[in-house]
Image (tube, rainbow, N blue to C red; front, side, top):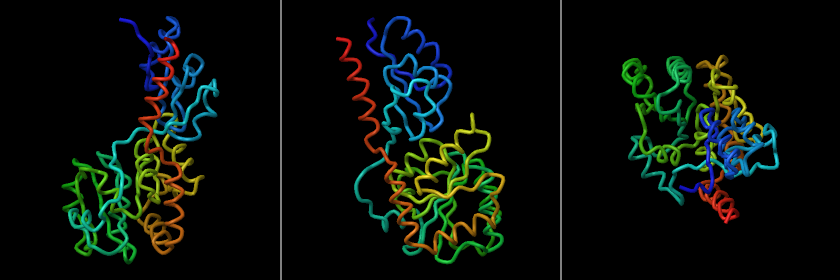
Length: 276
């Protein structure tokens, strides 16, 4: 079977395939999600015809920068206007008030969950705010059983599906900094409070967060500085400033690449057709 293009996602296991493609003179296309490319993407840029980048800032780390193409990361999200009132009713939220989406990913994040619980125990949830809190399935029962009786403006769920509904109704998001999460945040233009996972490979979550912070799309709290008090103060500042939230949302949207998959496919097809 003749191979037209070798496409690799950039993980270390893809290294041999990238090198084999180069040895057999097959064009190589790399896809890199994060703002700090992995070793395979950095070295592989020497052999690749194109490196499709998911986030800005990655190009400067490639060994051959001329191969970089900023396509964005593909995200499977609906487009067009969403009826926020309908989504809020479906999720059990009140029709009015600033909705703060809390998520540490599908499995939850222990430090984010702990800080949110501390904030609620201190009764520090800012006025006019309500929480939509995805705890992670294995953490839900423990958190739900310990919620203070005063936590009346909190909707706790183990997992939210479909996630786009949570993005669509949220006004602010508190989240980790995985590349796909950030790409989804950008598509929905959400002002964000980001808490990088401190043990991510090559500290890539912190570097991902820096891209959004420098663009004016996010505020960043380091994991070891995250407490109920710091979270409450940061939320209060953001909730009180409508103009800032609006500007942060626009800045996030400026980083969005809603047609990322199409751009990657076009890049691959162009390279494949150039061989014929």
